[in-house]
Image (cartoon, rainbow, N blue to C red):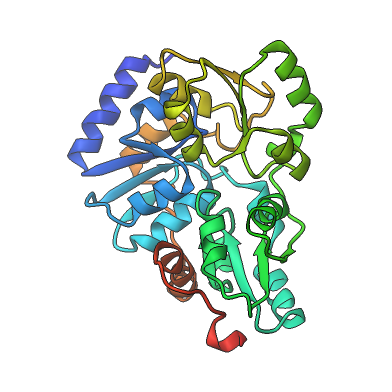
Length: 314
């Protein structure tokens, strides 16, 4: 039997109020999930929001590492991930052992860990970063220290180009953004002459260079609001276009590649959100030992002081 969407939405709203819950959604979520969320944003925006929530329950519509981060920042809260299978291929590419081996190879280096990673990897890193603040994070590291960047080699390469710093890159990547190409940019420029091309820095280096700007999803939203362009070509997961269109109804947003879809981001649904609120599952928890160390890397990211390697790694 089909479930009425309006009934589902109304019940979610009712339960959210009854149980003192908040719904956070990443920019790549399904349109209807973004619409029901109390707050939609990129990884940095969501991390900051998760650290300052007043509600008792957090329904995190994203992928597993994002819900883990929220659980670490708010250990006293119940953090739910509507679909427990919502993983991240990039995050799964790097293990804590991989990072420890790199530390042995490059003693005294600072490990910058992209937030798209497991709690265990964060726990053996010095600082986290997002695509929004990675350049700023590297800028807080003294030139006397080598820098290891995990797990995304393309974001790390972008940061290296933008800062002029030599960075030791782990061989990880986002399969969705890796599908974007220079040929696609050339094709879209012909179809939409004069339209700026913005891409996510998880894209390959040559794609970032060929585009007009390489921006996080949050930065793309800010760019779109300020731009005088009436048509903008967007190179990232297609879920972002829903927010861009809602915030800029007078502009046209064209996906650089229509098949740039992360199936994991799309696993959360209204029905699963409702079930999470009804049953308070699946709950995301991080062991206190791992959370304490991983949280230190996240807190370092949210600070503004110099970043140095942990004492045990110096």
